[in-house]
Amino acid sequence: MAQTIAVLDFGSQLTQVIARRIRESQVYSKIYPFATPAAKLREDGVVGIILSGGPQSVYAKTAPHPDPEIFKLGVPVLGICYGVQLMGHFLGGTVAHSKAREYGHGVLTIKKAGKLFAGLPKKLRIWNSHGDKLTNLPPGFVATAVSDNSPFAGIEDPKRGFYGIQFHPEVFHTERGVDMIRNFLVTVCGAKQDWTTKDFIAHAVADIRAKVGKSRVLLGLSGGVDSSVAAALLHKAIGKQLTCVFVDNGLLRKGERDYVESLYARHFKIDLRVVDASKLFIKRLKGISEPEQKRKIIGRTFVEVFEKSLKSIGGAQFLGQGTLYPDVIESVSIAGNPASLIKTHHNVGGLPERMKLKLIEPLRELFKDEVRLVGAALGLPKEVVWRQPFPGPGLGVRVMGDITADKLEILRNADHVLQDEMMKSGYYWKVWQSFAVFLPVKTVGVFGDERTYDYVIALRIVESVDAMTADWAKIPHDLLQKISSRITNEVRGVSRVVLDISSKPPATIEWE
Image 1 (tube, helix red, strand yellow):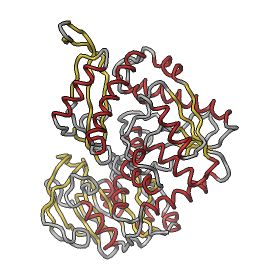
Image 2 (cartoon, helix red, strand yellow):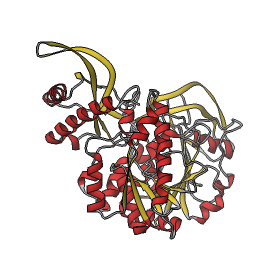
Image 3 (cartoon, helix red, strand yellow):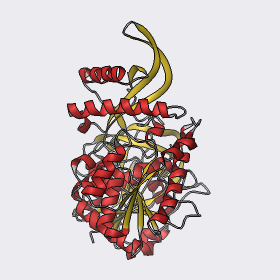
């Protein structure tokens, strides 16, 4: 086993991003609940601890606090934002509410490089998100860096291996942040850089086998990257103990059902059962316009379909899902983490109590680009590994407003044209995601010499690395013109095509 860096999670939406940056440095990391006993960390052989950020004040009654004994383990500790405030609070310093809250870009001035800032420029752009700050250092600490609003933006106690920073080095907005994390991992903790994608697969396979034993696993296979890689990983671990169920929910892309059947049942020899539940889903969604209602109805109906599928395979003890970290963090509620809810993902949040299935999510700690690397290492073909993301609720969250069969057909045909042209041009493989959105408004148009009054299709084409942030892709105008012309000419019911040029944030990638 590679050396382990423990990341204690205090409710930040960026906790998994910290773990990701550690993996990018080829060091093994594991996320632990914030209150994990120091004895457990010692038992797991951790060589360093990172305290994540979090949305609360260290003095709040409900504030998450770690086991104080972690500071006596004799391993280096790095506190990030809320984490550095915890260090101040527990080790004899003072934390107070800041008169001027620091949020967004700031400037860090390094006063003393030490081990954490070794090799970095004296001034760096950083990303802040805090309302409290250290006002007095704990005994043994010295200040190493300052920011506009914090005299202790960087602190250290090198004798004990304790380091703290008031900003977020894990985000792209912080210059050389990855170097700071790497300095902590390698120079301070002495961790070996020997963790690879193959190591992740071996570790995941061992975990799956230990968790599943001789039980059976039922997995909902959509044909997308996430569920495909989850299926391949589970199949590698437990073979014939896995049964995949593909649900035709009536919200699929054109030709999707045939594609999935051909690829998985015939090519990969996976036990695949196809269930046509399209009428049930469409009936349940009739008259529903609110996005969260749609997602919840689709999620509940999926669970019902899986329940019925259990009988056909003779029962199962686990439900496998291709949940990724961005799905998890957008779906977490204040009571659970306490990161804030953005939108509900149909495959996040566990199962109803009436179901006896346990949940197994082997990709839950990964981002999309990491999942692609795992898929490639497992031998999945390019058309699967690099397929663009498709939401679990399908076209149900790409038809704005209420859903009807006619609207779905218009969207399905328009999206088919878009994908066809993106493939022909090669841009399909160059962007993160490209899809069509049906807008429930009609506009006047001219077809031949006649007046038309038909619907609008929006094109959403974005570039991203991990879906946490995204920007609209700068597609050549002649390609956009060809896509627009084909949609308005070939898809009945569409008179206008528009382009979405919103970034995430403030917009999300999907419209609902």
